[in-house]
Length: 390
Image 1 (cartoon, rainbow, N blue to C red):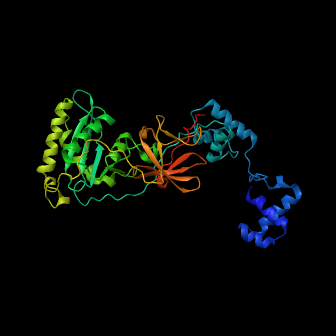
Image 2 (tube, one colour):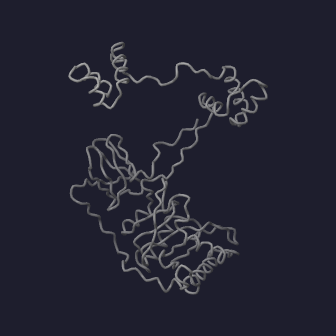
Image 3 (cartoon, rainbow, N blue to C red):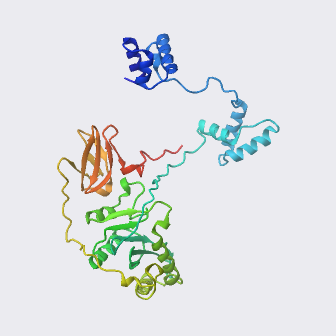
């Protein structure tokens, strides 16, 4: 039952005045009497939502002009509304032709415009990344690829401690893969211990703009180790400014000119890292060197990852091979393929509304009506389907 029908039922009961009903339903007396009039004239069908389109369009485009636009577009399918507008002016001379925006509407109405792919965007949150000590934040990024002497590409993976500016790794790879990146971090964790946070941009393999809460397999592994993955806003490299500044020096000193092969290029990276950490003074450190500030983390890499125990009262669900959890009988809720074989916890906060956690991290909110999970704070809106091509 909608609000209009409820209003009419209350009015017919005669228990309240129209003014009291208007105050109760939050509508004006004018709108109330309009609903009553429609109901008296047409019954319940009169309460159905009516079209808001104007009954008469005084500046409607003439039909011959509409057909001319359609014919031009079909004859020259590569031309857009702006160029079609110019051709129409030439064709009709002094006669007034439709505006560019009107031509676009005509093309859209007749299915002559391709729908653009929906771009998944992440809403900016303007995070603040300020480390108060070593190993609080490690920043990580892939410096732009470049071609070596043997004509193969090199993708340098760089890891730096945000507090001390100490470069922990510069590793050249032929491809920026999850497996290669994880192997580098495995070695770093064994040597330096674990940081509290790892700060990256929104690119693979660190984050994914089409995944729930930007999760990737690498981010899930970090979370299992007790590390919090944090991300810069899209198109805001200044939020990781010290890392980008280090990349400028890396590019100037270790890639110009590039070495012939990956092995020789790695030797140049190693020499740069030693010089950057042990020989070069840094203004942000009071003209001291990064090696003077960096200390190994007290948190060691565990030999195995212990299963997570969710608090009592939470509903624990297993993420199946399709990346979804079972919900009721024959129903599925998509979570993320990065969490396959993991367990998530659900906490009911209202009837049909649930918080969804992976370990101690809030992923988003589940609505039983739609059987979809909305990301935490709405930062990332996942597309329901890929836009169909016209």
